[in-house]
Length: 113
Image (cartoon, rainbow, N blue to C red):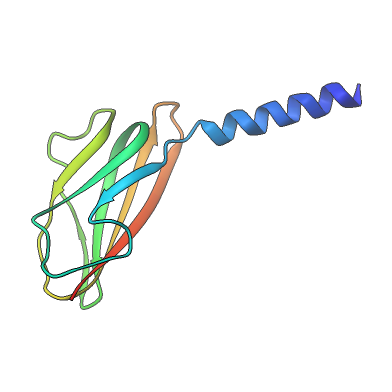
């Protein structure tokens, strides 16, 4: 009986771990130092997600919610226009829903120098 309970627990944990999409790549890359503010940012996820909110935080300005436009359906790749705020550290925070209905969130940073 203990073996069965252990097997069920391990299976449940493994299923939960794979239920969420992760960010495969971002443009600019997480931690990148770039020479100019990009006109847009992009995210590529490992599985379908629906973005619900994306915010840009700049070290010298209040946070700014980025417009999702028509990119509100489930997809793996998203590109959003970016309003430059000059040199400094940018943090992009995102929230969304996985195809399984789980809420997800994450962030990446880049520096304009």
